[in-house]
Amino acid sequence: MRRFAGACRFVFNRALALQNENHEAGNKYIPYGKMASWLVEWKMPLKRNGLKIRPHSHCNSH
Image 1: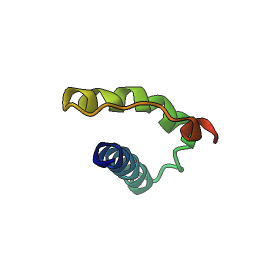
Image 2: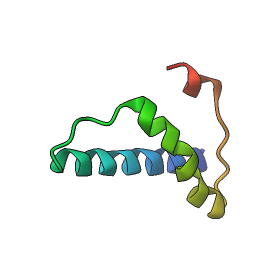
Image 3: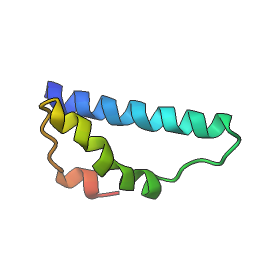
């Protein structure tokens, strides 16, 4: 459960930082579809640190 929460926190913090940088630069909101495509890249550091990330059925329902 801690690993899952840690992975969620990592993704949320990364997405929030990107949205804040984007907003400060005067750009529009980054849509979910674009950010979702970045998740594959974001998983790499987590895997290197020993976190196992598995897709769950409820994650794909949106």
